[in-house]
Length: 598
Image 1 (cartoon, rainbow, N blue to C red):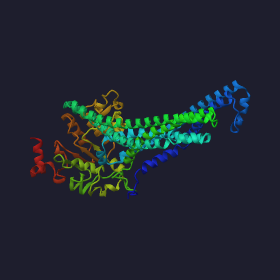
Image 2 (cartoon, one colour; image 1 turned 120 degrees about the vertical axis):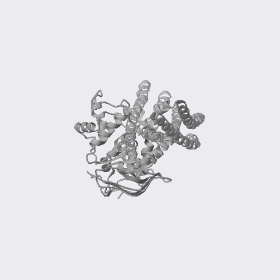
Image 3 (tube, one colour; image 1 turned 90 degrees about the vertical axis):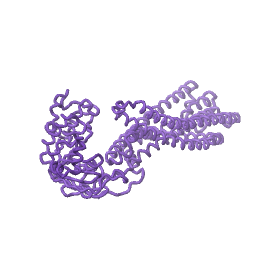
Image 4 (cartoon, rainbow, N blue to C red; image 1 turned 180 degrees about the vertical axis):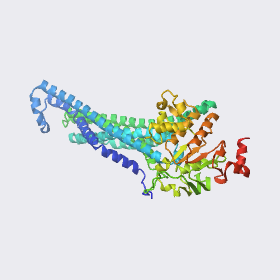
């Protein structure tokens, strides 16, 4: 049985973040200690100036709260000035060192979370069915895995502790200001609520703009990926200008949404600057009156003015960080949306391991459609015997490739069942099922690694002897040894230096090295030259050796070599038999052959 416990929205992301924070608790403690040290340094920074102005230059007696500094004053003016100046430098050095420690440790936490998050996203995306990948789009996924996780990294590595530091600094400074002169502090505090209200209101607009901008970035990346992956087609049809116009519209939409977000963020900074100037002016006017009334010393007014100037810096930083948090929350939601997708194809908790099957395949009343409105297979029933060589033929859209996708459990049937050796394939783990099925796709997809790694992709532990044996069986060994570094030659992106036939023979070798019980080939000779096609056919004939072989055929060449030909039309099996018997029956198969040779 599969685990059906419901997952609450955002639960996986929260669990992942909590797990990462738990692993980094030592770094978090160090960052928190450093944060408190930086706050203390910022609060203490103006006090040496008070000592210099009030108790060294103006020779005012020390209050009881500062009586511990009396020996310093007793040393004389210059020693006291040198000591106070040294204290200013020491506080600055301590603040710098603690800021570095906080930056380093918080960055470590942020990078660790991003590392885990990207790994989890990549793993989760690979577990989703092809239906989900078709629905989401490659560009959107790239934006989420790369761009959105970067914003989350910045949030955890910098913004979060900076936000905490500025908030604590704000509270600490206000506390000291109220201790010094509550009336003056109250006048400054009155400027904060309207400012925070404006920041909150503007941040809602920033969040909306950020959501729109991220959506445009996903579409822009999708467009870029689509065009660059099909650049040969674009150039062949002379559509560069058309594609440039389409991409320009995407980047213009992204530019407009980005500028809206920037304007709103700038309004936050401007509002803070205006209120900061007003608060400083109020402090100077009211503070001067308090000094003249002897209720405040010049040094205390200097501390007060320094605090007011510093007070609006945390507010300004909090405003900027709030705007960044708004953008990061959009990214967090986008990442969470992916993690919350439940794979629609999953193994049972007690799934069986498929090992060395005989290879009998049965489709029992199988129906399937990529969308509910357009069924591809309609109650299809067929049987392929163990070790049988079968060709699947039919017009485009008949469901031939869909049979392969369902056999591999890349999709699940909407009804019916598929059996291997009499057991429903849903009872087997997907990994063991796919291990026993070798696949050669119509699109000869290879990776930008060595020939050896490409052939061993489905069996990473394959020894070089097995790799070479598979290459020989696929008639690929001859051209491989002529490559600059033989089996260690790096193929580069999409193996563009090889011909289509060479790439297809490498794909066949990749399937054969697994020594699968079932070999499925999807139109293996549809896009290659006649010489390569002949070599592929010869290779398939040599490697059959009792394997169940299913070939999705397009060119209908050498059909007499198969034990049976299955003819599909509109998702149903309409004919089956040997090539000779089907030709004699003068039905759908003969019509296909005549159409191919017309």
